[in-house]
Image (cartoon, rainbow, N blue to C red; front, side):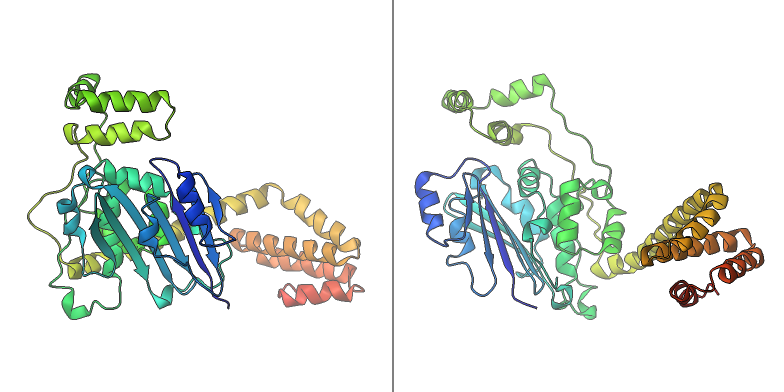
Length: 375
């Protein structure tokens, strides 16, 4: 297995300047560069710059390596985020990091586990969650991504069993039972345990949709200075990408925010892991029930065309070709499943033996049927 590293940087609030594109283009002759993104793939070397340094030009970065390492970096304007509320979700300094650099705040989310090695990867973008949406969620006060990152941190091997009783969960945001598609992608990319998430979601209240009224928007806009309003209008006239999001970010401090559970009692990690055992069993039962429902649905379809399937077995067998023999065999396997369900295996075996007698001079076909224990 060869080495594989993938980086994608995204400019969300505004496109790259010509100078920025020039500087980034000098890092690698094979960089995939657009006005809003830069993509790097390495098999034997590495990026010739620190990712955090490149965030001077970008707002987000996704990184994945096939030895089990995944990283997301976000850059935020310092005056648009509440760092104090974010710090409640830190667990050590390995999984979540918050750093202030000048007028920006850098949020770093990490996942590393040698047991999560991805093996062969040839398209890192396939694993990348929608970074712009996750960043916008945070700017809008939705802290679910931080709680999910905290959950991922609790799965790290450096946390011993004896420590789980001393680790309490951070504030539980609303909506963990109904995470967004972007957040589901994050859960998949970071290998967050599904049962642990379900256990955590037990204490999460329903997400209250926060759609500000016209009056609330007017009141929030009144808090902007004349210069700020003029600046937004000029940029709007220039067709700046993502301006509505930036305006909403500027208004957010004066608008209703998503609810966050502020109960004083927090569950310990030990309690969450205990709850996750029950959730794991429930999820297994649900999965088994879904598979059984799919199986029954398939068998109902077989039953409707059972006579036709028997005719097709004979027809495919008479073709005398490998593909025909395989189709005949596959049909018999399906018919056997139907016979088991209908408790008519004796009749099924009799019909198969009759077919075997008819096609006894087709050794390749007989071999396939024997391999499937049909005769």
